[in-house]
Length: 187
Ligand code: GLN
Image (cartoon, rainbow, N blue to C red; front, top):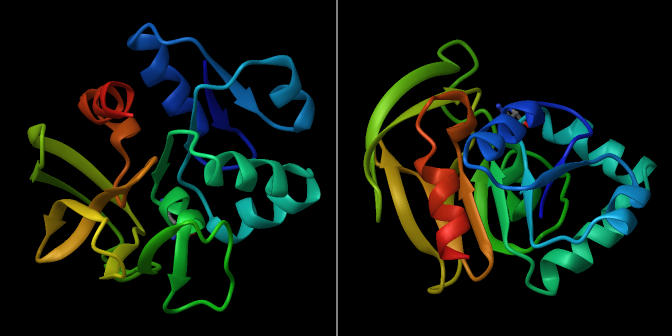
């Protein structure tokens, strides 16, 4: 079962992507959701990282999910989800799970030209459509075990390390399900 963090942001589109792939899933809103279901993988969706961060603390989910990630549960973090996993956010003092050896920049493509569509090569998949919405990018990679999977204009917009896969863009907002499939196949 894949659990999708459903506190704020674009979680429903991830649920739909998993449904289309025929993968059992559930929404995580509180600790009871984790008690009731077995968890084989986790998706941290896009949204507003500061808001999701607050709601994680208020719901009591923060420490539990942090432990799950540290213990190796496969996790896909998209956009704000990438920010939540980063060990460093270069333009924000806040920090969340601090589990991936990357430094990210929030709203890196600029607030005005914040949203755009692109087609780029994703390592191991090929050329795929990508939707960016006030997206972060990975400014710095801080460990050799982080593998770069995709760049846009020279900036790293997808990477993986250990049990973690992150994308700056929203793979759940196109009809292309290959990033979800990649996550399910690889981790
Ligand atoms: N700009 C948002 C943040 O900093 C992320 C945007 C998104 O998830 N689409 O949290």
